[in-house]
Image (cartoon, helix red, strand yellow):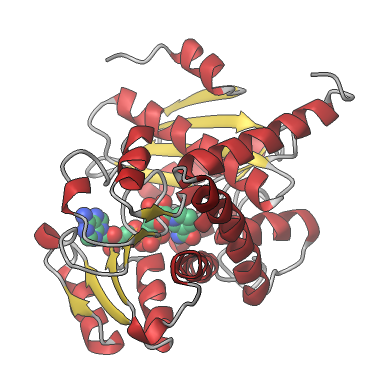
Length: 354
Ligand code: NAD
């Protein structure tokens, strides 16, 4: 169904949606700015070949809003913004990212950008030659962001295990990691260092083979990635992977991973709850990179990994404690907490008037 953009913006509380088109570089992109009441918008650039423009707009808006929720839950003085770049064969990536860099600079600090799927060190390097408002991948930047995300994810997994069993007991745990990219691979390494058994799936055979050889991870075919019996299923690839067809296949006790917008729709969070699976909301557990990147941009401080683990671990603990004691789906609890904090921020920005 065609998206009614202004209606969707009004329903979701969006401030702006920019469409970028540059015939010279071939740039076709959308930038959604969700909410900047608490501070500038933070969010990366996703490069992906979307089937339809509508899909791109929807993804862009969903991702931007998640960034606002992450800021609200983790107490980051900022909001959410995200760009999706419509990828296609033969696109001149360098020209496109240089064009986007100039556009980011023209926004004057309203949106700070960084990595996401399809935007890595090389692309960030091109952007950084044109704008100050980007996470630099070099020594002048905040330090590794994928590692911050991965360490936050493992801290969140620990909080979920404690919520169910009262202990982490990693040596007795089996975790299935979907996706061995920047974050998934690091999650596997951290889990293996704690003595857990790790199974993983990956579309790229080279990445899979490397993880099997260097990390002692058991590789599962992607066609069977939802099926193994395990303690935790960790989605670290793309969003929207838990839906009517995949949900019944899960044989885990916990879902906890880095991917954004894991649930195809909110009712799939309810479905997990009905099946007795504890879902750790994505925008709470995967905020490590945001905490690190946003803090660095605003204060120049490089947040230590231990602090990231503590902050994500305690945010997840708070949400799961309420969800378990009230017997409610954690995704709904997390959304309510984030919305309530946003309301407080908006009210105080409005001089205390609702
Ligand atoms: P990435 O592109 O480096 O890795 C994703 C990996 O998943 C790729 O290797 C890809 O081949 C694989 N993959 C895709 N579909 C798969 C499937 N069905 N089964 C198995 N493997 C599959 O991305 P990343 O930076 O590691 O991020 C992973 C997820 O975490 C994304 O959803 C991203 O939005 C989210 N995230 C990342 C960060 C970060 O710091 N990088 C922060 C927050 C959220």
